[in-house]
Length: 106
Image (cartoon, rainbow, N blue to C red; front, side):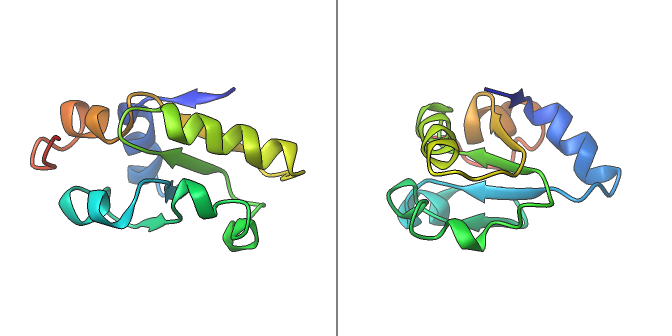
């Protein structure tokens, strides 16, 4: 599985690269802490909402620490999703640690 660090993701965003950020946590988690311009598709809904992903653009999936997002990526691959998928290593916690300390940790 391809992984990307929070720092690498921030560099891609700053460079204007076309990347979609998919948050696979639950709404209450997102309400507490989020990455700007990310789209919420909870992991339990990811297969039913797979058509909301823009397959020509790389997608970075994230959760709290990286476990749910990695399982969501595996599920998408098994379901035949053909776009590029990356797991945000360390999840939103890494984003808070490496990129934006104003994002609360939980």
